[in-house]
Image: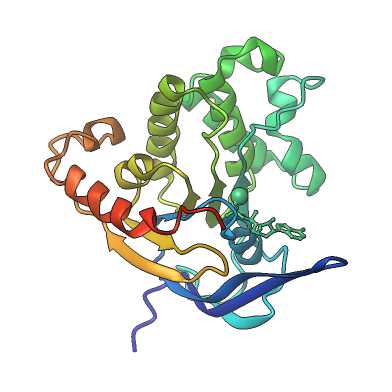
Length: 260
Ligand code: ADP
Ligand code: MG
């Protein structure tokens, strides 16, 4: 048995227990993620996608099942995790620079090396001249780049993206998601992206995992291979295989989208 994985989930189960009763959310979720892979997870609203990410991040403990880790360097310690959420969560009372170093500040990691890396990213991502601006002075795309730098500053091994583009309008979303994912690809990090948008999943990911409605199970896994001259996510939407993947995913998810 090879150990060519970074994360291996086996039979993860989770339920929320409240005063009003029990909500079974995850039912025997199992899948692997290879180091450097970009995986998209799609599923109906409320099926447990955010819960699953919280479990992977170590914020919630599964009620049953195991998470095994095998970092690229062979170590078995839990990977450092970076989170990007639906809103950029930049603080208006801090400059862009103060925002991107916030994670380092909180984690007492304001070392010369880390700050040099942040400065490098600000330059690479075209944000150097915005470092003293407030978030409201930046475009939606620039703010997402700043949010990405804040996440990368801590040098996570695993990036968890929970519908990070869903607050943007459709046109902005197309270009911002392509831009952010291109930048993430360049880092070679392992990524798990949650999205509602099947086209986004196909154009960005190496593999798409479909969850059923709650209590959710893995309905299917679809590896994506697009024949492309140019590797950009926008070009991916015109790849000859794109519509076949879309139809397959739509077929899988259609029956799950009914009211629960
Ligand atoms: P998704 O991200 O797929 O939309 P979530 O993981 O946020 O779904 O939630 C899955 C289900 O668990 C939903 O029915 C939601 O109402 C319920 N839920 C989420 N968080 C809590 C909580 N803290 N307490 C009780 N129920 C919750
Ligand atoms: Mg969610």
